[in-house]
Length: 469
Image (cartoon, rainbow, N blue to C red; front, side):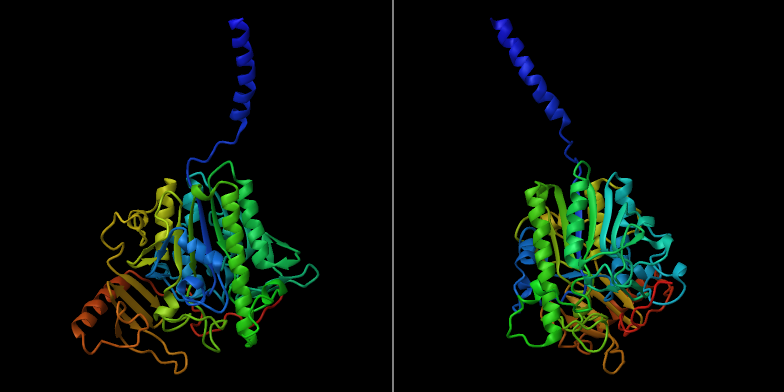
């Protein structure tokens, strides 16, 4: 009788064991997701005081991990900022100082001798994908799939229309394209709205690679111009807001917030939230000044300045890091950090070996509170004649006035007391000016001349689209 019971037990357990063995192996390395907004106004999201429209999903993402309150990008302009993030190095070290708008295509874009975060993570066994805006070159050698990404769905240049039509003619320019969404290297004929389509593709990528760790760079074009309105988002903008351009911008922001909500809901539903290290930031400050730099009515309050300037409004951005169970929840981190830090942080958790001369650092110990010192002794910027250095509470900045086309010369601000950069202390603190300006000059010796010039005050969509050659 005992023999019969034992036999039945074994027969019952064998199928269960086989079923368990057939289950896909859970990735041992965390997934890595980077969500990038485009030209997002610092003061337009709820967690930073924005009140025109609610942004519950972006706010919830910020609350789900660590919100960095002194967070920066390495340039106040789209393409160089992204080049810094992708390489973990100040882009001025390799000549990617401006947007690649004009010139010979083979010489424009992220230099081919630079390794990207996708290169490193692909080498560590990750499935790598990019959905959305690239803006790092247009020719085959500069294409995302030549730069470490296994899969690509998006557009190659600086701006793109949101409302897509299958029957519309595709148009291409080095600054702007229309109805030219690529799947890998082929243009697709599509109907839809880019923010929604990019989210669909992101979810599909996650599901395709559920059996291995993945890295996804989800680069929305929202809230960059053109300010095209999809009714389901535009109808949610309060009627009290009557400015047509502002309504368009806010509709893009509502669409972006909904998209973040869909991404987070999918991670939770599929049980991958705790297995995913997530970064959210904007590529530069909002563009709130006419008529320059793809004006989109963004508000950077309480910061001064806009996209294209080395004032805080051009370079300080929303920056959130989430990894439930691995980093704190609902905390803020107040030491200065920069988007250059994403690559070494991601590669550290992935076990990917990186080059020794990165400018970014691994933030994990700092976000945990174990790193009591600041991640960086100082942060630096060069954007044409504009320049800046931040060290502790002090910021020394030389910025360009869009109206007068004049540069300010060195100005000094105490950002702990004056985040709006209203009170120039250069005359009162000449020793600090001398110290910081000398530090900036030493840093600048490692930089090279720009490989091309894009024009700092150029509107990226000013030349308009043209047919693909």
